[in-house]
Length: 535
Image (cartoon, rainbow, N blue to C red):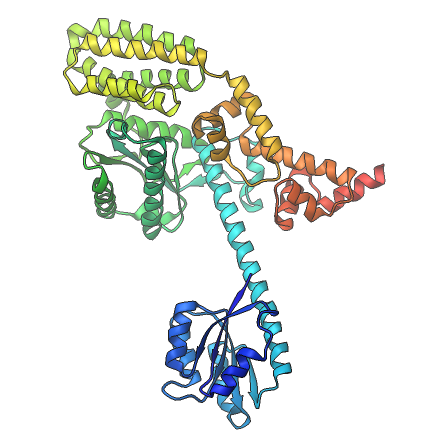
Protein backbone atom coordinates (compact mmCIF):
# COMPACT_ATOMS: atom_id res chain seq x y z
CA UNK A 1 0.00 0.00 0.00
CA UNK A 2 1.42 3.35 -1.09
CA UNK A 3 1.59 6.14 1.46
CA UNK A 4 1.15 9.78 0.38
CA UNK A 5 3.69 12.54 1.09
CA UNK A 6 3.42 16.33 0.77
CA UNK A 7 6.63 18.43 0.61
CA UNK A 8 6.57 22.11 1.64
CA UNK A 9 9.48 24.60 1.42
CA UNK A 10 9.84 28.06 -0.08
CA UNK A 11 13.38 27.34 -1.35
CA UNK A 12 13.12 25.67 -4.77
CA UNK A 13 16.46 23.82 -4.58
CA UNK A 14 15.53 22.30 -1.19
CA UNK A 15 12.13 21.29 -2.53
CA UNK A 16 13.78 19.62 -5.53
CA UNK A 17 16.32 17.83 -3.32
CA UNK A 18 13.58 16.60 -0.98
CA UNK A 19 11.66 15.13 -3.91
CA UNK A 20 14.67 13.58 -5.70
CA UNK A 21 17.36 12.68 -3.15
CA UNK A 22 15.21 10.58 -0.85
CA UNK A 23 14.21 7.11 -2.21
CA UNK A 24 10.47 7.72 -1.90
CA UNK A 25 9.47 4.78 -4.12
CA UNK A 26 11.63 2.39 -2.12
CA UNK A 27 10.14 3.71 1.13
CA UNK A 28 6.64 3.09 -0.22
CA UNK A 29 5.62 6.71 -0.76
CA UNK A 30 3.94 8.62 -3.55
CA UNK A 31 4.58 12.38 -3.61
CA UNK A 32 1.15 13.98 -4.05
CA UNK A 33 2.21 17.63 -3.92
CA UNK A 34 4.98 20.24 -3.77
CA UNK A 35 4.15 23.57 -2.10
CA UNK A 36 6.17 26.78 -1.57
CA UNK A 37 4.07 28.35 1.19
CA UNK A 38 1.44 27.46 3.76
CA UNK A 39 -1.51 28.51 1.59
CA UNK A 40 -0.50 26.18 -1.25
CA UNK A 41 0.29 23.45 1.27
CA UNK A 42 -3.12 23.71 2.97
CA UNK A 43 -4.92 23.46 -0.35
CA UNK A 44 -2.91 20.37 -1.33
CA UNK A 45 -3.31 18.78 2.11
CA UNK A 46 -7.11 19.16 2.09
CA UNK A 47 -7.24 17.77 -1.45
CA UNK A 48 -4.95 14.75 -0.96
CA UNK A 49 -5.04 14.01 2.82
CA UNK A 50 -1.34 12.99 2.88
CA UNK A 51 -0.01 10.49 5.39
CA UNK A 52 3.22 12.47 5.83
CA UNK A 53 4.05 16.19 5.50
CA UNK A 54 7.62 17.56 5.40
CA UNK A 55 7.30 21.27 6.11
CA UNK A 56 9.64 24.25 6.51
CA UNK A 57 8.83 26.76 9.26
CA UNK A 58 9.85 30.10 7.74
CA UNK A 59 7.86 30.69 4.56
CA UNK A 60 6.11 33.69 2.98
CA UNK A 61 2.29 34.24 2.92
CA UNK A 62 1.66 31.59 5.60
CA UNK A 63 4.45 30.09 7.70
CA UNK A 64 4.78 26.44 8.65
CA UNK A 65 3.26 26.65 12.13
CA UNK A 66 0.20 28.55 10.95
CA UNK A 67 -0.22 25.98 8.18
CA UNK A 68 -0.02 23.11 10.70
CA UNK A 69 -2.55 24.80 13.00
CA UNK A 70 -5.03 25.23 10.14
CA UNK A 71 -4.42 21.68 8.93
CA UNK A 72 -5.37 20.35 12.37
CA UNK A 73 -8.47 22.56 12.34
CA UNK A 74 -9.39 20.80 9.08
CA UNK A 75 -9.17 17.46 10.95
CA UNK A 76 -6.10 16.33 9.00
CA UNK A 77 -4.16 13.79 11.07
CA UNK A 78 -1.07 13.61 8.84
CA UNK A 79 2.27 12.90 10.50
CA UNK A 80 4.48 16.01 10.26
CA UNK A 81 8.25 16.52 10.13
CA UNK A 82 9.37 20.13 10.60
CA UNK A 83 12.42 21.48 8.76
CA UNK A 84 14.07 24.24 10.79
CA UNK A 85 17.22 26.34 11.10
CA UNK A 86 19.27 25.82 14.29
CA UNK A 87 18.38 29.27 15.59
CA UNK A 88 14.69 28.46 15.24
CA UNK A 89 14.87 25.42 17.49
CA UNK A 90 12.81 26.94 20.33
CA UNK A 91 10.32 28.23 17.79
CA UNK A 92 10.03 24.72 16.42
CA UNK A 93 9.07 23.37 19.80
CA UNK A 94 5.76 25.20 19.50
CA UNK A 95 4.91 22.71 16.77
CA UNK A 96 4.85 19.91 19.31
CA UNK A 97 1.43 21.02 20.58
CA UNK A 98 0.11 20.50 17.05
CA UNK A 99 1.31 16.91 17.02
CA UNK A 100 4.52 17.37 15.03
CA UNK A 101 6.22 13.97 14.91
CA UNK A 102 9.86 15.07 14.52
CA UNK A 103 12.10 17.91 13.34
CA UNK A 104 15.19 18.09 11.14
CA UNK A 105 17.69 20.95 11.40
CA UNK A 106 18.98 22.72 8.31
CA UNK A 107 21.26 22.20 6.52
CA UNK A 108 19.49 18.88 5.97
CA UNK A 109 21.34 15.64 6.59
CA UNK A 110 19.49 13.48 4.04
CA UNK A 111 20.72 10.19 5.55
CA UNK A 112 19.28 11.23 8.90
CA UNK A 113 16.07 12.39 7.22
CA UNK A 114 15.68 9.07 5.40
CA UNK A 115 15.99 7.17 8.69
CA UNK A 116 13.36 9.41 10.28
CA UNK A 117 10.99 9.02 7.31
CA UNK A 118 11.38 5.22 7.31
CA UNK A 119 10.68 5.10 11.03
CA UNK A 120 7.58 7.28 10.69
CA UNK A 121 6.40 5.23 7.69
CA UNK A 122 6.57 2.08 9.81
CA UNK A 123 4.59 3.87 12.52
CA UNK A 124 1.95 5.01 9.99
CA UNK A 125 1.56 1.51 8.55
CA UNK A 126 1.20 0.01 12.01
CA UNK A 127 -1.45 2.61 12.88
CA UNK A 128 -3.34 1.84 9.66
CA UNK A 129 -3.12 -1.90 10.33
CA UNK A 130 -4.35 -1.42 13.88
CA UNK A 131 -7.21 0.81 12.77
CA UNK A 132 -8.23 -1.69 10.07
CA UNK A 133 -8.19 -4.49 12.63
CA UNK A 134 -10.28 -2.47 15.06
CA UNK A 135 -12.77 -1.61 12.33
CA UNK A 136 -12.96 -5.27 11.33
CA UNK A 137 -13.51 -6.35 14.93
CA UNK A 138 -16.14 -3.66 15.40
CA UNK A 139 -17.94 -4.79 12.25
CA UNK A 140 -17.71 -8.45 13.30
CA UNK A 141 -19.07 -7.60 16.75
CA UNK A 142 -21.93 -5.62 15.21
CA UNK A 143 -22.88 -8.50 12.91
CA UNK A 144 -22.63 -10.97 15.80
CA UNK A 145 -24.85 -8.79 18.00
CA UNK A 146 -27.37 -8.28 15.21
CA UNK A 147 -27.51 -12.01 14.57
CA UNK A 148 -27.79 -12.66 18.31
CA UNK A 149 -30.74 -10.27 18.63
CA UNK A 150 -32.40 -11.66 15.51
CA UNK A 151 -32.37 -15.13 17.06
CA UNK A 152 -33.79 -13.68 20.28
CA UNK A 153 -36.57 -11.94 18.34
CA UNK A 154 -37.46 -15.16 16.51
CA UNK A 155 -37.55 -17.17 19.75
CA UNK A 156 -34.39 -19.14 19.01
CA UNK A 157 -32.40 -18.31 22.14
CA UNK A 158 -30.91 -21.27 23.98
CA UNK A 159 -29.11 -21.69 27.29
CA UNK A 160 -25.98 -22.66 25.37
CA UNK A 161 -26.11 -19.42 23.41
CA UNK A 162 -26.01 -17.45 26.66
CA UNK A 163 -22.38 -18.51 27.16
CA UNK A 164 -21.34 -15.91 24.58
CA UNK A 165 -22.58 -13.07 26.75
CA UNK A 166 -19.89 -11.01 28.53
CA UNK A 167 -18.86 -12.61 31.82
CA UNK A 168 -20.33 -9.76 33.88
CA UNK A 169 -23.76 -10.21 32.24
CA UNK A 170 -23.97 -13.99 32.15
CA UNK A 171 -25.46 -14.38 35.60
CA UNK A 172 -28.11 -11.75 34.97
CA UNK A 173 -31.39 -11.94 33.08
CA UNK A 174 -30.40 -9.99 29.93
CA UNK A 175 -32.94 -7.45 28.77
CA UNK A 176 -33.44 -4.51 26.43
CA UNK A 177 -34.84 -1.07 27.23
CA UNK A 178 -37.64 -1.19 24.70
CA UNK A 179 -38.64 -1.88 21.15
CA UNK A 180 -40.13 -0.05 18.17
CA UNK A 181 -41.87 -1.90 15.34
CA UNK A 182 -42.35 -0.09 12.03
CA UNK A 183 -44.61 -1.42 9.30
CA UNK A 184 -45.38 -0.06 5.84
CA UNK A 185 -49.11 -0.31 5.18
CA UNK A 186 -49.87 -1.68 1.69
CA UNK A 187 -46.20 -2.50 1.01
CA UNK A 188 -46.95 -5.91 -0.53
CA UNK A 189 -49.20 -4.43 -3.23
CA UNK A 190 -47.08 -1.35 -3.97
CA UNK A 191 -43.88 -3.39 -4.37
CA UNK A 192 -45.54 -5.89 -6.69
CA UNK A 193 -43.84 -4.58 -9.84
CA UNK A 194 -40.36 -4.37 -8.27
CA UNK A 195 -37.67 -6.89 -9.07
CA UNK A 196 -36.21 -8.88 -6.13
CA UNK A 197 -33.05 -6.76 -6.40
CA UNK A 198 -35.06 -3.52 -6.27
CA UNK A 199 -37.01 -4.72 -3.22
CA UNK A 200 -33.84 -5.75 -1.41
CA UNK A 201 -32.03 -2.50 -2.25
CA UNK A 202 -34.97 -0.35 -1.14
CA UNK A 203 -35.42 -2.24 2.14
CA UNK A 204 -31.69 -1.96 2.91
CA UNK A 205 -31.85 1.78 2.18
CA UNK A 206 -34.72 2.27 4.65
CA UNK A 207 -32.89 0.15 7.24
CA UNK A 208 -29.79 2.36 6.96
CA UNK A 209 -31.91 5.50 7.19
CA UNK A 210 -33.60 4.18 10.34
CA UNK A 211 -30.22 3.40 11.87
CA UNK A 212 -28.90 6.91 11.17
CA UNK A 213 -32.03 8.70 12.38
CA UNK A 214 -32.60 6.81 15.59
CA UNK A 215 -28.95 6.71 16.64
CA UNK A 216 -29.13 10.50 16.78
CA UNK A 217 -32.07 10.14 19.15
CA UNK A 218 -30.97 7.03 21.08
CA UNK A 219 -27.24 6.15 20.73
CA UNK A 220 -27.49 2.42 21.28
CA UNK A 221 -30.09 0.91 18.97
CA UNK A 222 -30.18 -1.99 16.53
CA UNK A 223 -32.38 -2.30 13.44
CA UNK A 224 -33.54 -5.84 12.59
CA UNK A 225 -35.59 -6.98 9.63
CA UNK A 226 -37.47 -10.26 9.63
CA UNK A 227 -39.56 -9.59 6.53
CA UNK A 228 -39.90 -7.00 3.78
CA UNK A 229 -41.66 -3.75 4.63
CA UNK A 230 -41.22 -4.22 8.37
CA UNK A 231 -38.37 -3.17 10.67
CA UNK A 232 -37.85 -3.81 14.36
CA UNK A 233 -35.70 -1.45 16.43
CA UNK A 234 -34.29 -2.98 19.61
CA UNK A 235 -33.18 -0.27 22.04
CA UNK A 236 -30.33 -0.72 24.54
CA UNK A 237 -30.46 2.70 26.17
CA UNK A 238 -32.48 4.05 29.08
CA UNK A 239 -32.77 7.30 27.09
CA UNK A 240 -35.32 5.55 24.89
CA UNK A 241 -37.80 5.45 27.74
CA UNK A 242 -37.89 9.25 27.91
CA UNK A 243 -38.37 9.82 24.16
CA UNK A 244 -41.57 11.82 23.65
CA UNK A 245 -44.42 11.34 21.21
CA UNK A 246 -43.43 14.67 19.62
CA UNK A 247 -39.91 13.36 18.92
CA UNK A 248 -41.34 10.20 17.38
CA UNK A 249 -43.71 12.33 15.30
CA UNK A 250 -40.70 14.23 13.91
CA UNK A 251 -39.00 10.93 13.02
CA UNK A 252 -42.23 9.69 11.44
CA UNK A 253 -42.44 12.82 9.28
CA UNK A 254 -38.83 12.46 8.09
CA UNK A 255 -39.35 8.79 7.25
CA UNK A 256 -42.65 9.41 5.48
CA UNK A 257 -41.08 12.14 3.37
CA UNK A 258 -38.31 9.74 2.35
CA UNK A 259 -40.73 6.89 1.61
CA UNK A 260 -43.17 9.01 -0.38
CA UNK A 261 -40.46 10.43 -2.63
CA UNK A 262 -40.61 7.14 -4.51
CA UNK A 263 -43.72 5.42 -3.09
CA UNK A 264 -46.47 8.01 -2.47
CA UNK A 265 -49.13 5.37 -1.74
CA UNK A 266 -47.35 3.87 1.26
CA UNK A 267 -47.97 4.87 4.87
CA UNK A 268 -45.80 4.08 7.88
CA UNK A 269 -47.07 2.86 11.25
CA UNK A 270 -45.17 2.66 14.53
CA UNK A 271 -45.80 0.42 17.53
CA UNK A 272 -43.90 1.67 20.59
CA UNK A 273 -42.67 -0.18 23.68
CA UNK A 274 -40.79 2.04 26.16
CA UNK A 275 -40.35 -0.44 29.01
CA UNK A 276 -37.58 -2.93 29.79
CA UNK A 277 -38.14 -6.37 28.28
CA UNK A 278 -36.21 -9.60 29.08
CA UNK A 279 -34.64 -11.11 25.95
CA UNK A 280 -36.65 -14.28 26.34
CA UNK A 281 -39.88 -12.29 26.10
CA UNK A 282 -38.95 -10.57 22.82
CA UNK A 283 -40.71 -13.15 20.56
CA UNK A 284 -43.99 -12.74 22.47
CA UNK A 285 -43.63 -8.95 22.39
CA UNK A 286 -42.87 -8.99 18.66
CA UNK A 287 -46.01 -11.01 17.94
CA UNK A 288 -48.07 -8.85 20.28
CA UNK A 289 -46.94 -5.67 18.52
CA UNK A 290 -47.88 -7.19 15.16
CA UNK A 291 -51.24 -8.07 16.68
CA UNK A 292 -51.76 -4.49 17.85
CA UNK A 293 -51.43 -3.29 14.27
CA UNK A 294 -54.33 -5.59 13.39
CA UNK A 295 -56.49 -4.39 16.29
CA UNK A 296 -56.01 -0.70 15.47
CA UNK A 297 -57.09 1.30 12.45
CA UNK A 298 -54.55 1.59 9.59
CA UNK A 299 -55.01 5.37 9.86
CA UNK A 300 -53.47 5.36 13.36
CA UNK A 301 -49.76 6.08 12.77
CA UNK A 302 -48.63 5.27 16.33
CA UNK A 303 -49.75 2.44 18.61
CA UNK A 304 -48.76 2.13 22.27
CA UNK A 305 -47.52 -1.29 23.42
CA UNK A 306 -46.65 -0.26 27.00
CA UNK A 307 -48.35 -2.24 29.75
CA UNK A 308 -50.84 -4.98 28.99
CA UNK A 309 -54.11 -4.82 27.12
CA UNK A 310 -57.01 -5.49 29.53
CA UNK A 311 -58.59 -8.85 28.90
CA UNK A 312 -62.00 -7.29 28.21
CA UNK A 313 -60.52 -5.24 25.37
CA UNK A 314 -59.12 -8.35 23.78
CA UNK A 315 -62.48 -10.09 24.13
CA UNK A 316 -64.25 -7.10 22.58
CA UNK A 317 -61.80 -7.30 19.68
CA UNK A 318 -62.89 -10.86 18.91
CA UNK A 319 -62.66 -10.50 15.15
CA UNK A 320 -59.17 -9.11 15.40
CA UNK A 321 -58.14 -11.93 17.72
CA UNK A 322 -59.76 -14.53 15.46
CA UNK A 323 -57.85 -13.03 12.55
CA UNK A 324 -54.64 -13.24 14.54
CA UNK A 325 -55.27 -16.93 15.31
CA UNK A 326 -55.76 -17.70 11.62
CA UNK A 327 -52.65 -15.65 10.87
CA UNK A 328 -50.57 -17.68 13.32
CA UNK A 329 -51.87 -20.98 11.93
CA UNK A 330 -51.14 -19.93 8.34
CA UNK A 331 -47.68 -18.61 9.20
CA UNK A 332 -46.73 -21.74 11.14
CA UNK A 333 -48.07 -24.01 8.39
CA UNK A 334 -46.18 -22.18 5.66
CA UNK A 335 -42.90 -21.64 7.48
CA UNK A 336 -42.77 -25.12 9.03
CA UNK A 337 -43.76 -26.77 5.75
CA UNK A 338 -46.85 -28.33 7.35
CA UNK A 339 -49.60 -28.94 4.71
CA UNK A 340 -51.90 -30.49 7.33
CA UNK A 341 -51.96 -27.23 9.27
CA UNK A 342 -52.87 -25.33 6.10
CA UNK A 343 -55.68 -27.82 5.49
CA UNK A 344 -56.88 -27.17 9.03
CA UNK A 345 -56.89 -23.41 8.35
CA UNK A 346 -59.05 -23.95 5.26
CA UNK A 347 -61.52 -26.07 7.19
CA UNK A 348 -61.76 -23.77 10.21
CA UNK A 349 -61.98 -20.67 8.03
CA UNK A 350 -64.94 -22.07 6.08
CA UNK A 351 -66.64 -22.99 9.36
CA UNK A 352 -65.99 -19.55 10.87
CA UNK A 353 -67.31 -17.67 7.82
CA UNK A 354 -70.40 -19.88 7.59
CA UNK A 355 -71.35 -18.99 11.17
CA UNK A 356 -70.54 -15.28 10.91
CA UNK A 357 -72.28 -14.34 7.64
CA UNK A 358 -75.63 -13.60 9.22
CA UNK A 359 -74.38 -11.91 12.40
CA UNK A 360 -71.32 -9.94 11.26
CA UNK A 361 -70.81 -10.12 7.50
CA UNK A 362 -68.93 -6.81 7.38
CA UNK A 363 -66.48 -7.94 10.08
CA UNK A 364 -65.95 -11.26 8.31
CA UNK A 365 -65.25 -9.48 5.02
CA UNK A 366 -62.69 -7.23 6.69
CA UNK A 367 -61.05 -10.28 8.28
CA UNK A 368 -60.79 -12.15 4.97
CA UNK A 369 -59.34 -9.09 3.27
CA UNK A 370 -56.61 -8.89 5.93
CA UNK A 371 -55.90 -12.65 5.79
CA UNK A 372 -55.57 -12.55 2.01
CA UNK A 373 -53.00 -9.73 2.16
CA UNK A 374 -51.07 -11.55 4.90
CA UNK A 375 -51.11 -14.76 2.86
CA UNK A 376 -49.80 -12.90 -0.18
CA UNK A 377 -47.00 -11.43 1.90
CA UNK A 378 -45.97 -14.77 3.38
CA UNK A 379 -46.10 -16.64 0.07
CA UNK A 380 -43.94 -13.99 -1.57
CA UNK A 381 -41.42 -14.13 1.30
CA UNK A 382 -41.20 -17.92 0.95
CA UNK A 383 -41.09 -17.73 -2.87
CA UNK A 384 -44.28 -19.77 -3.27
CA UNK A 385 -46.05 -17.34 -5.59
CA UNK A 386 -45.11 -16.33 -9.13
CA UNK A 387 -45.15 -12.61 -9.89
CA UNK A 388 -47.92 -12.91 -12.51
CA UNK A 389 -50.13 -14.84 -10.08
CA UNK A 390 -49.61 -12.22 -7.39
CA UNK A 391 -50.54 -9.47 -9.87
CA UNK A 392 -53.80 -11.27 -10.69
CA UNK A 393 -54.75 -11.47 -7.01
CA UNK A 394 -54.00 -7.79 -6.46
CA UNK A 395 -56.04 -6.95 -9.55
CA UNK A 396 -58.98 -8.81 -8.00
CA UNK A 397 -58.54 -6.87 -4.76
CA UNK A 398 -58.84 -3.58 -6.66
CA UNK A 399 -62.43 -4.48 -7.46
CA UNK A 400 -65.32 -5.26 -5.13
CA UNK A 401 -65.22 -8.88 -4.02
CA UNK A 402 -68.06 -10.53 -2.17
CA UNK A 403 -67.44 -12.51 1.00
CA UNK A 404 -67.78 -15.75 -0.95
CA UNK A 405 -65.32 -14.57 -3.62
CA UNK A 406 -62.75 -13.53 -0.99
CA UNK A 407 -63.05 -16.92 0.70
CA UNK A 408 -62.68 -18.70 -2.65
CA UNK A 409 -59.46 -16.82 -3.46
CA UNK A 410 -57.97 -17.56 -0.01
CA UNK A 411 -58.86 -21.26 -0.19
CA UNK A 412 -57.35 -21.50 -3.69
CA UNK A 413 -54.14 -19.89 -2.47
CA UNK A 414 -53.97 -22.20 0.54
CA UNK A 415 -54.37 -25.16 -1.83
CA UNK A 416 -51.58 -23.75 -3.99
CA UNK A 417 -49.40 -23.35 -0.88
CA UNK A 418 -49.89 -27.02 -0.02
CA UNK A 419 -48.98 -28.01 -3.60
CA UNK A 420 -45.95 -25.73 -3.46
CA UNK A 421 -44.79 -27.33 -0.21
CA UNK A 422 -45.08 -30.76 -1.81
CA UNK A 423 -43.08 -29.67 -4.86
CA UNK A 424 -40.56 -27.59 -2.94
CA UNK A 425 -37.28 -29.06 -1.77
CA UNK A 426 -37.86 -30.79 1.52
CA UNK A 427 -36.43 -29.15 4.60
CA UNK A 428 -34.17 -32.20 4.90
CA UNK A 429 -32.66 -31.51 1.47
CA UNK A 430 -32.28 -27.80 2.18
CA UNK A 431 -30.48 -28.45 5.45
CA UNK A 432 -28.16 -31.03 3.88
CA UNK A 433 -27.26 -28.39 1.28
CA UNK A 434 -26.74 -25.83 4.06
CA UNK A 435 -24.50 -28.27 5.94
CA UNK A 436 -22.33 -28.81 2.86
CA UNK A 437 -22.13 -25.06 2.25
CA UNK A 438 -20.91 -24.49 5.81
CA UNK A 439 -18.23 -27.17 5.55
CA UNK A 440 -16.99 -25.79 2.21
CA UNK A 441 -16.88 -22.19 3.50
CA UNK A 442 -15.68 -22.84 7.05
CA UNK A 443 -12.63 -20.59 6.67
CA UNK A 444 -14.50 -17.75 4.97
CA UNK A 445 -16.46 -14.82 6.34
CA UNK A 446 -20.15 -15.55 5.67
CA UNK A 447 -23.44 -15.22 7.49
CA UNK A 448 -27.13 -16.05 7.45
CA UNK A 449 -27.84 -13.73 4.51
CA UNK A 450 -25.19 -15.44 2.34
CA UNK A 451 -26.37 -18.97 2.99
CA UNK A 452 -30.07 -18.00 2.70
CA UNK A 453 -29.40 -16.42 -0.70
CA UNK A 454 -27.54 -19.56 -1.77
CA UNK A 455 -30.52 -21.75 -0.77
CA UNK A 456 -33.03 -19.34 -2.31
CA UNK A 457 -35.07 -18.83 0.87
CA UNK A 458 -35.58 -15.94 3.29
CA UNK A 459 -33.37 -15.42 6.35
CA UNK A 460 -36.21 -15.95 8.81
CA UNK A 461 -37.30 -19.16 7.07
CA UNK A 462 -33.70 -20.42 7.04
CA UNK A 463 -33.30 -19.71 10.78
CA UNK A 464 -36.50 -21.59 11.53
CA UNK A 465 -35.58 -24.62 9.40
CA UNK A 466 -32.03 -24.71 10.75
CA UNK A 467 -33.07 -24.63 14.41
CA UNK A 468 -35.75 -27.28 13.87
CA UNK A 469 -33.35 -29.57 11.99
CA UNK A 470 -30.12 -29.24 13.98
CA UNK A 471 -31.53 -28.33 17.40
CA UNK A 472 -29.28 -25.28 17.64
CA UNK A 473 -28.98 -21.92 15.94
CA UNK A 474 -26.87 -21.32 12.86
CA UNK A 475 -24.21 -19.37 14.82
CA UNK A 476 -23.99 -22.05 17.51
CA UNK A 477 -23.60 -24.77 14.88
CA UNK A 478 -21.04 -22.79 12.88
CA UNK A 479 -19.00 -22.01 16.02
CA UNK A 480 -19.06 -25.67 17.08
CA UNK A 481 -17.91 -26.84 13.64
CA UNK A 482 -15.10 -24.29 13.58
CA UNK A 483 -13.85 -25.11 17.06
CA UNK A 484 -14.06 -28.89 16.53
CA UNK A 485 -12.09 -28.51 13.29
CA UNK A 486 -9.56 -26.33 15.11
CA UNK A 487 -9.18 -28.98 17.83
CA UNK A 488 -8.43 -31.60 15.18
CA UNK A 489 -5.84 -29.38 13.52
CA UNK A 490 -4.21 -28.55 16.85
CA UNK A 491 -3.80 -32.28 17.52
CA UNK A 492 -2.76 -33.43 14.06
CA UNK A 493 -0.75 -30.58 12.53
CA UNK A 494 2.17 -28.33 13.37
CA UNK A 495 0.49 -25.23 11.97
CA UNK A 496 0.69 -22.11 14.11
CA UNK A 497 -2.33 -21.13 16.18
CA UNK A 498 -2.79 -18.02 14.04
CA UNK A 499 -2.83 -20.16 10.87
CA UNK A 500 -5.30 -22.63 12.34
CA UNK A 501 -7.56 -19.78 13.42
CA UNK A 502 -7.51 -18.41 9.87
CA UNK A 503 -8.27 -21.85 8.39
CA UNK A 504 -11.48 -22.09 10.44
CA UNK A 505 -12.62 -18.52 9.85
CA UNK A 506 -11.00 -16.46 12.62
CA UNK A 507 -8.55 -13.97 11.08
CA UNK A 508 -7.71 -12.37 14.43
CA UNK A 509 -5.79 -14.65 16.81
CA UNK A 510 -7.00 -12.86 19.94
CA UNK A 511 -10.64 -13.35 18.99
CA UNK A 512 -10.01 -17.00 18.02
CA UNK A 513 -8.38 -17.63 21.40
CA UNK A 514 -11.31 -16.04 23.24
CA UNK A 515 -13.93 -18.10 21.38
CA UNK A 516 -11.89 -21.30 21.72
CA UNK A 517 -11.43 -20.75 25.46
CA UNK A 518 -15.14 -20.10 26.03
CA UNK A 519 -15.99 -23.25 24.09
CA UNK A 520 -13.39 -25.63 25.57
CA UNK A 521 -12.36 -24.01 28.85
CA UNK A 522 -8.74 -23.65 27.74
CA UNK A 523 -6.67 -21.67 25.25
CA UNK A 524 -5.53 -23.27 21.95
CA UNK A 525 -1.96 -23.46 23.31
CA UNK A 526 -3.14 -25.22 26.48
CA UNK A 527 -5.28 -27.62 24.45
CA UNK A 528 -2.40 -28.49 22.09
CA UNK A 529 -0.04 -28.98 25.04
CA UNK A 530 -2.52 -31.25 26.84
CA UNK A 531 -3.22 -33.36 23.76
CA UNK A 532 0.48 -33.77 22.96
CA UNK A 533 1.09 -34.93 26.55
CA UNK A 534 -1.77 -37.45 26.35
CA UNK A 535 -0.56 -38.87 23.05
